[in-house]
Length: 183
Image (tube, rainbow, N blue to C red; front, side):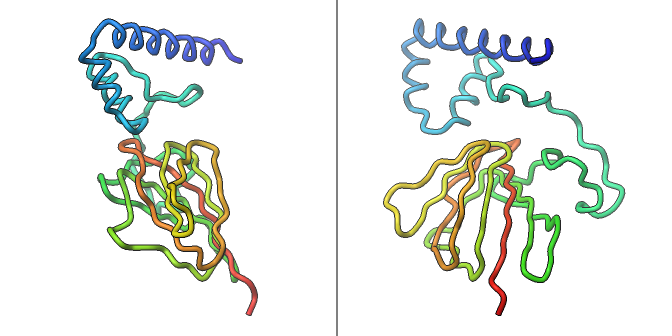
């Protein structure tokens, strides 16, 4: 581990320990923490008390995005770069496609499927979370699935599913591969 990464890790541990100590000393903060049901709510609560605990270890510090010089797909050199979409929105970029596949980068911000809407796709889908977290619900499962960085799953054709929630800014980044059988 490089020294810079070690210092970033130790700083995050110090901030987490200080936030825990403060929550143990403050019944109001402890109750507010108890009311949090998602990671981003804890991060936001910590920020109101001066703690920056949202960055995951190894994530670089946020940097300004360079202005675009052409199409998004042509300019994209880092899958983790780019501006966050507006809350409730998703941005989909087709990175590559062929006769029987499509590879997409999806950037979601506080996004969810409309009430009562279920995806029912004709193609296979493999999806992986690159940044952030998300909650997906399958029609054939009672409990939603929580996904975080590095989690992936395969969705068979016509397996109904919906997006329950994604993170606020900087949002949730997905890599999605769609393919279909030859006719």
